[in-house]
Image 1 (cartoon, rainbow over the protein chains, first blue to last red):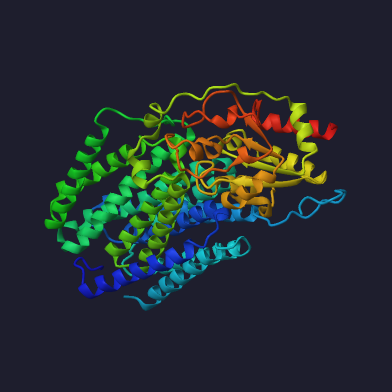
Image 2: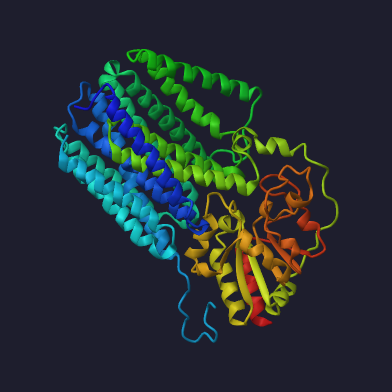
Length: 113
Length: 456
């Protein structure tokens, strides 16, 4: 059973994790080139679907009211739409980015420099 | 605490960070995303072994339904619908976080400690606001909600009052966690507030809104992590939250506007009081004329905008660019950060049409080239090439950095009709002597241009 009252030590540890993740996120994301901003958004969107972890527990545990189980079930559906959909479409997008397109035979000068 | 589950979460967190790091370069991006997907799998598999779980059938059914919907959406969704899809997925992510929070409160909210219920409150607020806000953003992008700002009298006062009541409930809930009424009022108001937050924002400002909603969805997941005491949720949520935040700052900077102005400015309403209309005549050019110019040019720069996306003209541009390159013309694409409806929108469309990314130039890289450019072709872009932003300090978009196509030797603007752009502003570029207007659907204009160039 999860803690209902925050143990101050756990709260502090969580805040450390939050602060370091924020710093790390800032450092990494600011290096992503504008070229990849759309894939970045769909990738981080897939990552934030990590709430599926919480949803799974709510849907599967013994709840005092069945409403919670239903809410958990719907949450599992909507989060897993993002998990699968997010990663698949990000990959589909990234597949399209090519530095140079190989020249087609018959092209005099090729397609790119 | 099960040590194996915790190790799964740790592995997932590390893989997420490596995955995002991969996105800093197009060559490593796909591998990075594979790592992130592996991390997600580890986190989900680990969770399935959580000892709290007593029945698994709903989990499997949920994963199956959600996974299938996600897979179908991602396979069939055309790239031009990317902004809509992203808005929708922000809504799903936020809904999941909000529902987990509501279920937590329904289960044992009354026994929660002060800090715990505080974290829960954040989760609910961010989750609910993002859910309805993203649905409205989706509606605006899809065209079922009016794209222009929707405003009404006393809007700001109304919103502020609603916000105050909502935050009041939040404070009361932290003070007394068993106050279920406060919880449900707060939740309902948060759903309403999400709608109110996005309806006054015009479609042209969507890149900022999308980034901001992205950020909120991530922070909602991070707050869920605080509620559940789960670090992988905190890490992944925070990474997403900061990514969205950085993107929204970049987008605001690219429009030279403050976040406050985008969110509460109701842009369209302001521009009606703008300075007097630009006078002069627009010069219409013929297809053959443009074809000749292009065929004998040394350097051509294409500047795409949202019009390229609506006309699905990316393939037609690519064909024309190919043909010109074959004739020895240097072709580049100049991409403004806020062109389109989401960050990086134009890049994805051109990549889809097989334009190599070595031809895509950012605004700051392309501007020094423009004075040496023979023909700049503007495809369905308007505000991002509006010289008023640079020259007219009284213009509503004054100070917004633009792609300076008017410095090129010749400018061709592909435009559907001679109406105003999305923001409703006059664009003096269209009246300049160097500018020629080529009216018609961007896709068919480009296709005809390709044929005409072949005949030159």
